[in-house]
Length: 255
Ligand code: MG
Image 1 (tube, rainbow, N blue to C red):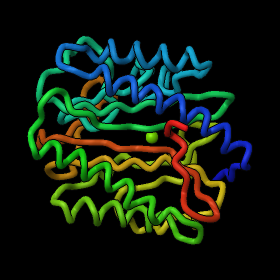
Image 2: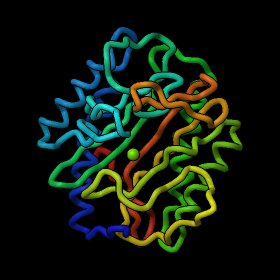
Image 3: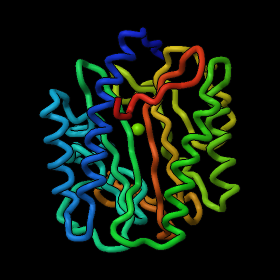
């Protein structure tokens, strides 16, 4: 069951989206060699709470046997794809770090992610980050009324693969609203399911996760952090969008 949001609900989601965007902007400034991921987590949590919102990821229930997610944000470095846990690891020159932030304000969630360079990074890492970002935009060109989810998925997959990278299979984008994860799922590759038809009022977290090497993943013993099986770099780019009568609107941005 896919929830269709009213104009008022989408306005609420813009507000939570703005909180996420502000936190990402601040972290972008703070990311440099020597800072720990726990420090970044504290900065983001403070911004989210000061704006009256709640960090959506904190305490999120994971797989059986995993602790509840301890951070307010996910911090995934280099070969870590998603769900990295903030801690005492210090960023080094040449790292790339993916930051995923969710915030809930007035009962509505918004979710966005970016991969940032730490100091000076290789040309290949820069290209990975840029291709991942652009694949999101290629995907949402297809997020229009009457298309299906597979149109978004296919556009992302084609763009990423034509640039020599791969999209991961096990983790996908999702509907979002009163719940952090709602229907439908939004794979970043073509599956056998075409997925539902897009309708105005659907709010979706579209989030390509792109590997430099092949798409296989491995879950670390903490049962959260997902890494590339071949040890290659991975990047992430995500925004919460609303499908409209015309072009989709990005909700996780500064207004
Ligand atoms: Mg998400």
